[in-house]
Image (cartoon, rainbow, N blue to C red):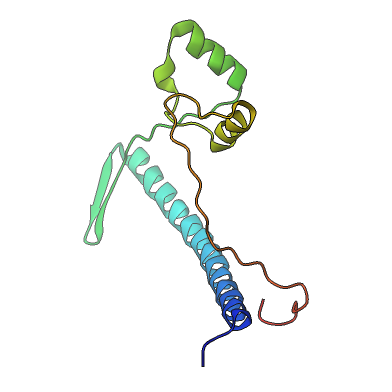
Length: 136
């Protein structure tokens, strides 16, 4: 017997809920693991700093110091002014906002030069408000 649309959507919603439950559980577990790992890394860092070392070796592996760069923006207006004034465009990522591009297309009935824009149809399923108690 061929499954009905209702059967397919019911099973899909059930599977999606199972997936979301598993993802949420895994996310919680990962937060806990990452916290514990961070504390262990901090303990190793303290030991290396106290001993004036950049690495520590054991039978289980080697811990070593690395330099990690990061950059965050606290004031976009100031950054953009600096970039324009100094022609420092290499500081910016090379991508466009799909929301802004879509807005441009709606307003101008054309795609901005140099941009490829497209859409695709995907199936999306929303749970029924009628069957809230069922496997959502």
